[in-house]
Length: 89
Image (cartoon, rainbow, N blue to C red; front, side):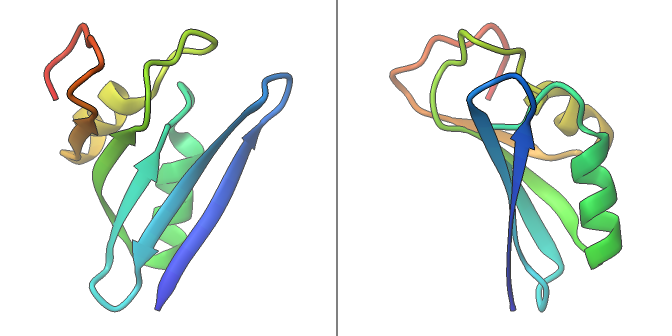
């Protein structure tokens, strides 16, 4: 079953998403915010393992949580080739 949960960040025009497959028990976070605890809790509650952190573009308006998610969960960071990242994808 598809899991699709938007996560709104107060004070910013920014939305991230936890998407997943409950049958495969795997998930991705799209455009994660800096505070990753919400994604970890959502994944745990739904029995999902966060395998990917996806950056849709370079974020100039907030600090991404992709590296923190990768460190805590082993998630692979995925980003577009046109972006310039200060970390490995």
